[in-house]
Length: 108
Image 1: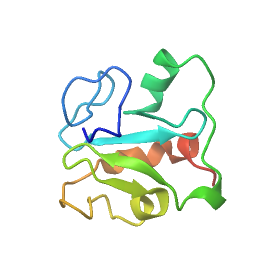
Image 2: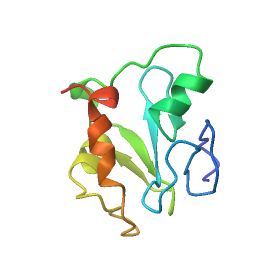
Image 3: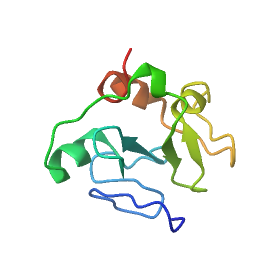
Image 4: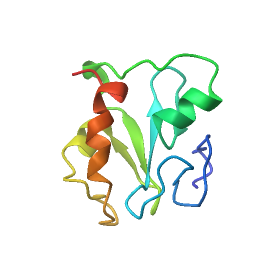
């Protein structure tokens, strides 16, 4: 990881896969709005943080809050949502299934 980025949670490899999500495409970590901390998924946050999840407000989607586990490039939420599930820096494929959890992370 870059020296300024730490990912917490139940990580199983260097590309931010965790105990809960560890398929080939499970390579992002999300900075949680409530604690300004990167976790691989909401389950890691629930198990490791001592507070409830707060969703990113829509007016803050221009902030960097998504980390590509392959190249460690940070994306804004808007960049991530418009990425077509591909890192714009290294072209690694993100898991499309993460979209099912957007309502946990981001305001609608």
